[in-house]
Image (cartoon, rainbow, N blue to C red; front, side):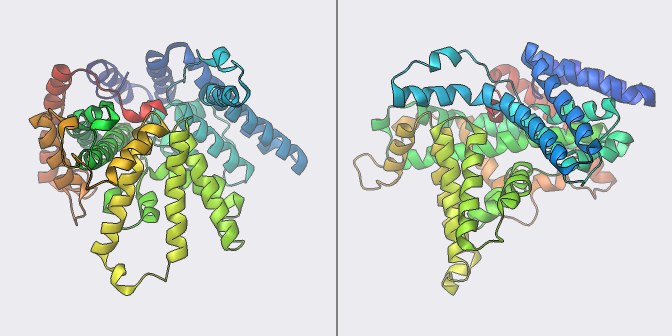
Length: 473
């Protein structure tokens, strides 16, 4: 079940909201817990057992860590809990990838044993939530939560469950203790949800046929212009798809009186890859900063150690997204450019410090990374890169591989670039999701919500279901 589907919008969500509005305070969290487990069961069937297992490991592991007096025992307990959580993730997400690579080097057929393993939806997201909670308790930054229903409700809360944002317990525990359900929260949340729905159904799904057609075309038919078009349109599609989902999750949580932090801050307005990662998938990049980069030593032990730590973090970031060499190389690509930017800090010629020149550097670089993210193999990504570097080759400016491009896709592309992507002081999206709206904008937001739901349902019914891209992670 996904947020843009009719069964969610017109069946599950009304039931959930009715319970939130009319349930007794003592029944609110238990009801929300049951609904969230039902939501995941509807999406993943028996894999709900994996979710429950992670809840049990995180809850009892943190309690045990909190009760331990001996430092050695605390280390052993938190280590065992982390090994269990990471072990479950590795089994479902990486075991077949490891087996395939063992087969390539040894000539064995180990991968046949694990080929049937299916990845549970959202496991990368909720595993990282469990790890952050355990580590925060271990560091004594927060106490272990004794209320099992409250903790389980936080952990399984359906808005963030299957594709993030990665929500830390310490940031939302007060909201889960006393959720503030109000007309203001409902109005703000509903508008934010509709905003995300529009981004997904109209922009992301509207643009999708362009990169889909190009990436599916034979390699030798893709020229310079087509390759850059594929990279640019896929980058825009991915942004609207994932940020749209994040907007919907943030809006849904707000409707229930829970505030999630922002997950995107106009990443394509960045002027460097370093800045891009402060704006793109913020909950993931901040997780890696706090729980991997800083524990590795961060930037405290000299330049060489800093560069090593950066490359480790981005290698793991790539593999977090998927068990393949394309994702590993995508992460390393970003890590290497951040390393270059670190080295070049203070050495850029002054003329290159101008905003538009930095933007002219950033945008082609980030677009060059998307073939690695989208390609099904390194060979396909290299073929796209070769075409992107061949402006004088025969057929370089032919768009045959992208034809036919529907008019709706072109409209979606222009709308996305103009309204949301390009740098600007205030976008239409920011206006509609502002926290400081007046009464007139509340009315506008309500109208926008109704129109968005109607338009998106018509488009979804006519165009069929398109899954969110980040569901595969």
